Length: 173
Image (tube, rainbow, N blue to C red; front, side):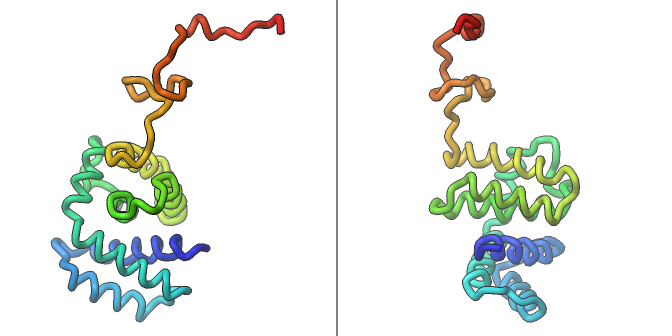
């Protein structure tokens, strides 16, 4: 397991603990981070440092992250989401909005894998859908190949030059 994956999983567990607190502060996050690493080993110092930064960042920006996540999950209010799912989304949303260096597809794929490991059966699909919309809003994912309705239309620029009836395949070779 890579350093960033270790960090994401540790950050998830820390923000999961903090989710029970109504309005945690960065100081509360620091306490939770210290308790977490006193009880669990981070295999790599870099993972520990990154997990700590992620947990602090999520705690500091939790309200804004929740608003961003909520915007892309209109059928599920934040308090109704499974705790694991909403905290995976918070960590990934923080990373998408704070770390332009890591490609959005990597952040989303990692969040989906973490959801498969820690979440329920439908968690991975839910996390993927919410983060895809969120990343597009933040300009982190291209919308090439999608028409005005957001659906894939098979072109590189999202504008079909031929009508569907013109796209038939010739059987004559």
